[in-house]
Structure formats: C-alpha cells, structure tokens
Length: 120
Length: 112
Image 1 (cartoon, rainbow over the protein chains, first blue to last red):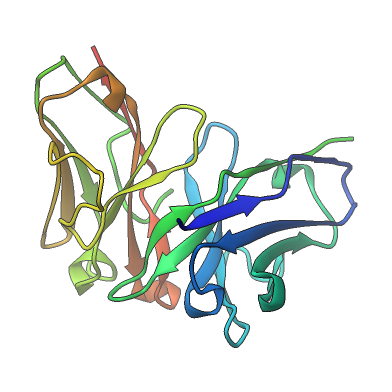
Image 2 (tube, chains in turn yellow, green; image 1 turned 90 degrees about the horizontal axis):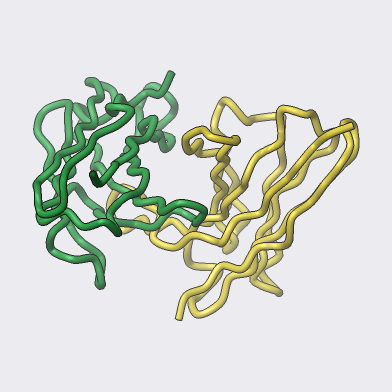
C-alpha cells in the first residue's frame, strides 16, 4: 500500500527556520516525482514544486522559487520542504503529493498534511 | 486569481445530478493538457477523483465522471449523496508557467 506520512504540526515564530518531512512507503521512492502543495487557511490548493528523488532534479513554481527549498534523502525515502526564515504568511497546511507522470502528471497519493503556524 | 476558473459553489438535492465546470485558456486546457479532479472532504487531505480528463481511480464510484472540450472541462456527479459534500478542485498544466501544475480555485458542493 502506497503511503505518504508527514511530520507533525509546527508552531514557529517569524524569522525562524523550519524543515518538514514526508516519508514514502509501499512503492519505489526513486521512481516517482514527489512534490508539495500549499493550502492557506480557508483557501484553495497551490502547487509549490517537485523533486525526483532518483537524481534530485528539482523544479519550483515561479511563485515559490527562492522562498522554500525542496530536497529528498532517497536512502530513507523521505522528501523535505524547508524555510530559512518564516513569515506569518507561511501559515498554512502543506501536503506532500506523489506525481504519477505516465502522461501529464497528476497527484495520485497525498500525505495527511502538516499544519505550519507562524505567529509571534 | 486562479489560472483555472471554477464556480465558487454549487448545490443539489440528494439523487440529483450536478456539474462543476473548470475553464482555462489556450495555454493550459486548450493546449491539450489533461485535466484532473480532486475531492477534499471537510478536514481531510484532497483525494484523486478523476485523472486524464475522464478516468476514475480504483474505488471511485461511477457516479463521478469527467469530460473535456476545448478550453474547458467538467466534473459530473449523478445520484448525489450527502457524503459527496466537499470541495472539488480541477488541475492541469500551463505552458506559460513553464509547464507547471495549476489548480482551479475550488468549488464547494452543498448537498441540500
């Protein structure tokens, strides 16, 4: 069974750094793109970027380029999303998603979400 | 403002049929990119509902169907049930954004 299990909720202050994780299991972690989707409170879904754990090829949405860093450790089948300096506007639920790219990519499996709250 | 446009809300009575539209442009749906649909039940992560315009993953009831034409796509739900009350999102790709994924703004379905 394919599973994406994310790290727990975080409460941080503006300016702090943060790294959240997403562990994949039940499939070949290095053979699928894995990415992140943001959902701000009461709002819709926004695609942030992706990484191919097989070779660490990483791509970002223009809206998130330079704001976050996506990485992966294939030895432990885990992808990461990190911030160097959080802002209050980073408060959101973050989902990791597996991309099935047989044709145009779609997101066939989702993590349970990690709630990030940034508040002074 | 989302690249793909969905109605903010739709509603229907149990047993009825509802449709949710997803309108794009010549740089996304009209460029031939597939449209995919996701269902987000209250307080849960989204779930894949339709992929490749009209394909249902295993376990998704055949009450859900998708179609695409020109620069638009639609999700149809027949035999509406209370458990279908959720937010629905379309997703495609946009060549003007270097081919990256884009979502519609989401549609809240209310079962009356």
